[in-house]
Length: 86
Image (cartoon, rainbow, N blue to C red; front, side):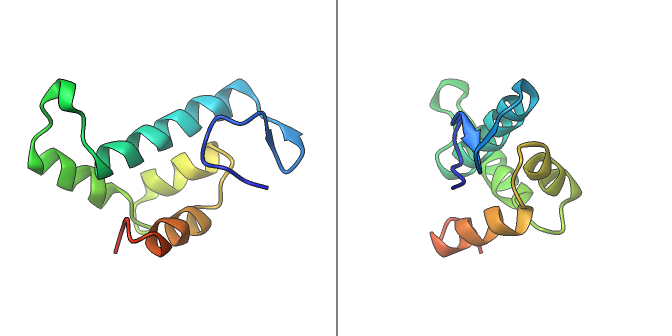
């Protein structure tokens, strides 16, 4: 079972510290694209930019997903299914 959080296991394999870090990076980027950060007074442009980052044509998005231990296509499809991305 795969969760987009800092769970202890992915498919019964322990998570290494680096994966936890990249999962946090991915989670923060998803949060920024959906809600923004009220503390930093994120502009609409920055929110749009964060949302555009979530794209299968974006090598950085794919790399972060892979570093976090996720298949980028799986993450993107999950977000699309929830109507979080187009």
